[in-house]
Length: 130
Image 1 (cartoon, rainbow, N blue to C red):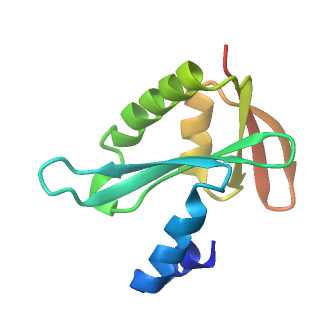
Image 2 (spheres, helix red, strand yellow):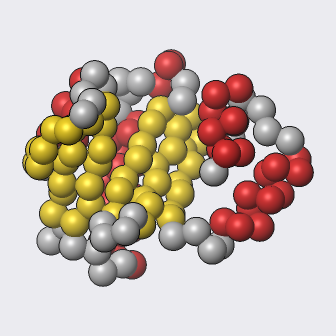
């Protein structure tokens, strides 16, 4: 987990750190999809689903500002949910978003998430998967 945080904060991880993360990855209760630009194979974002104690939490981001508001996340989100519905018996997923992340809150509301509660500096939202 620290390797990922270090990567996103500094943009670098060592080969050794990456190998350790990949070695442990199959034991983690999570699913990650990396969004890449077709012609360059450059990462432009990611979507993940993590198993928490009693629920599943989704995370998503676009890492390159050039690709924000281009519909990439909407398409990726739709396909990610389709995959989750087809291969897992998950009835609902949650999103924990900083209260200042208006873009993600609006995205979630447009995609049928419902606000469950606001605590500290987070908005907790739920999406039912039928």
